[in-house]
Image (cartoon, rainbow, N blue to C red; front, side, top):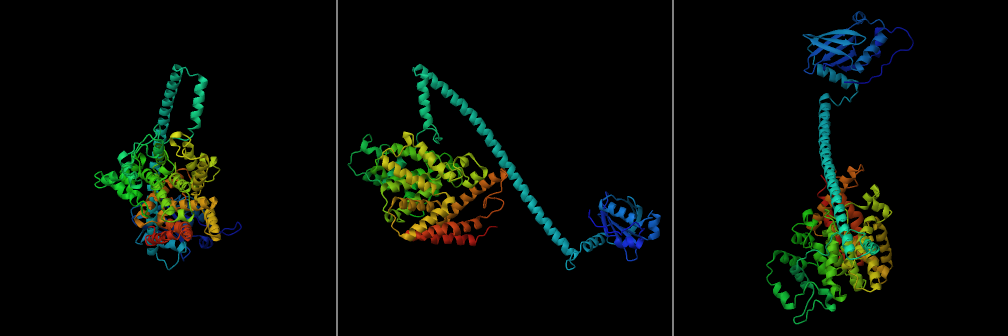
Length: 623
């Protein structure tokens, strides 16, 4: 025990009497190298009492009067007790229990022989400590010990939690190092491969008589169309399941019996890859579906126009799982690919605009492959947002209320499909906080949303991905502007501004006929779709909650590794799912849903579902 005390002494250079010095002497405590605790204090008889106790509660005690102290060398009691106080406070005393006594050596004060005592040494020491620190009389020593034990237990629990966190951080750091090592190795391999291809290209050019200038012009042209990574690599499209897509097409497009099918005809570009079932062929094919995947997809697509369309089950049917493993490659396509392909035929866009089916399949493969296998912002989320956007347009009544033309609806579906393309699993706040290259590039303004939409349009400069090649220049501009405005509107940093604009416009009238009004309404639709999981049936809602929690915690880990505090609700060691979800619903979801329900009354049920999900968290608070 090392306690610091104030020792008040008299003024002037006069010799202090023993009585004066003892009156000013505080209680002294020290611990010797032999693990003995010693108490020094004044008695009522103006003597010095020294008590020593061992860890096994052997007690030694003695009192010393003026004569005894003078025999110990005390000629100036003021200086004598100053030396004793210093020795006690600095733990410089030594002790040696021998038999029935203990020898206590105090530097500057001499050696004190303390005979063995029958006192409870521990109780004496503790009671004097409690008295010295002026603890409240209502708290007896036993109560103090209980409280100390509780605090010690709490501290131990915190220490164990910190140890677990430290272990997790070490694992994360090691995983990051392994990833860096892998990436560096992969970069070297790609550089070698690139060099080899470059040499082969130049060799072939030399054999063909191509000049260096001509070769450079070709390379410059390639550079113009390759600023964004093609997630398909050298491929144009995934290896889709022909029979499955034929079944999907048959659900939404009728090809009458006897009608001529010519895949090479310009008029039939919209079905130049997947031959459509005739009416009778489709009826026969769906009579007895023996293939499990085809049966599941066919059944799930029957709910395409319903609010609780299940993309989890669709993803599982297509790629075996909706977890990370089922989102990495998706060799036959996943929920986004199938949902988008179905909707293109559900609205008849393939025939109406005579879109080249090969290019559409390439584009759908490209968009789905461009989504990373994040826990939440993945291609399955895009499929869900696409479906809800379709629901708001059709069953929700937006298309009829605003009298949308086909180009508007086509643009809305494309915007929903690409709205989180190439999402890295971290939000705009992270980019701004860390000041990544993208944050600098886009000046901290809608960072991710800009990269989502610009990446896709950059890749669409390649003919094989240009689904707008069949539209006029005017249609292309109109569709592009709508897509850009809708995707940028999904930036939650602009939420209050967009919602406020919509409310003010709605207060004027419900006649949304101008293009700017139509785009505002479409932006509200995709915003609702983007956060619609809060207003879904509870099983689907909780499924999405687990996904977003995983992604939030992963961002929190990255922030912690970089030395930044974890963003709200992203610290896996301080779970706050219930608190976060309730706050999100109260301040973001419900106001948005109520506003849209005022414009589209058929959507009001979503507010009721949100309240039900909010009540779930009220009964399942964070533990």
